[in-house]
Amino acid sequence: MKRVAIDITHEVEHCFYPGKDFKSDDKIGLLKYLSNRGEMRAFAKGFAQAYIENFPNEKFDYEKLKALAIQTPAGQNYFGSFLDHKKQQIYREYCDLQLLHDLMVSLARKFTENFRAFETSPPLTTRQ
Image 1 (cartoon, one colour):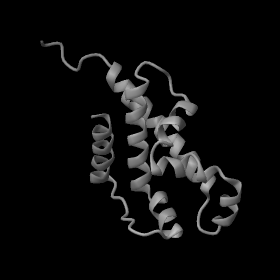
Image 2: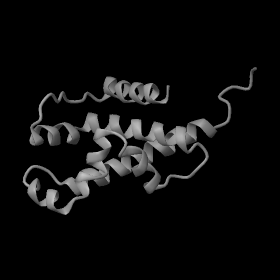
Image 3: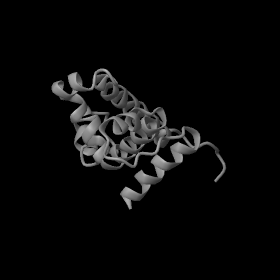
């Protein structure tokens, strides 16, 4: 059930921030896909949803986020390959992999904090 909620969170984000299709083994195509703003937001919201579900009462922790994220193909890129210095050099003419990683962490942190703030806010009405 958790995976379904994460997938729904990802896809709903695309209603407001369209993503990009990726149907190839082309590495440059994959970079374009993963650097698309809509995809980044959608993956970050999915990672945040997973974080909240797995660590409901804990403050944001990068290592815990990374451990969850690398269980997915996209997370293996954002939190693995994008931190590889050799790959950063190889693909630097196409994009800044370190920057994509940093943006993903920033977005995931923001969405995790937003989800948590909503969950802990007082009731919106006093009527029962």
